[in-house]
Image (tube, rainbow, N blue to C red):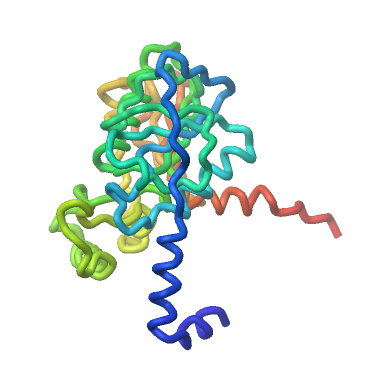
Length: 277
């Protein structure tokens, strides 16, 4: 078994391998930025990668999720937009250095027109810069004719500081302990503690409580799109939850889709259909 082999490795070897992996990451070459007014998105989907860097994600815990998401987008011909702030560019860790657009965005703001009706998001601080990205996307959509809309989150490529976990939550103690373990003795200040959104789901574990938590972190659709839309929340292969019924007999639908990893979607799409026996 893989885990048995790994457990027999000497601690020094594991540490050396870990250090090699981090030091082997190379940042992308110097690049320019596209003026937001020149971003032209075609098709019905786009992927926005918000601040995928160790400037905030000190553990580089979201790198795999980010790289898999970008790989998924490229394979399915979905345009990719990287948002980058003014902090050290060398700390941006995306493997792919050829997005369709590279846009300057210090707070995760989106200043370009979002014409696609399906936005995939990855990278970024769930409670801060990614929240800004999503609120701007919804505000952009609100200016357009009503139609079905989808926001898909890749949870292994998004990091969080647990701002919306309350002390009264039954999993609060587990969260604090896990956060303390994975951030043990890490430097404070510049890299304050965070874990991935997928890790947070693993701590909560109970599906009902997971949905309750995800409702807390959603952008304010009630302030931007109003009561006309039917709002749905879906997590992985779980049942769709209706958060708002919408107006009329067949209201437009806004769906928030939380996906474990783009790697899961790629595996599902690569499965060969079974032949009837």
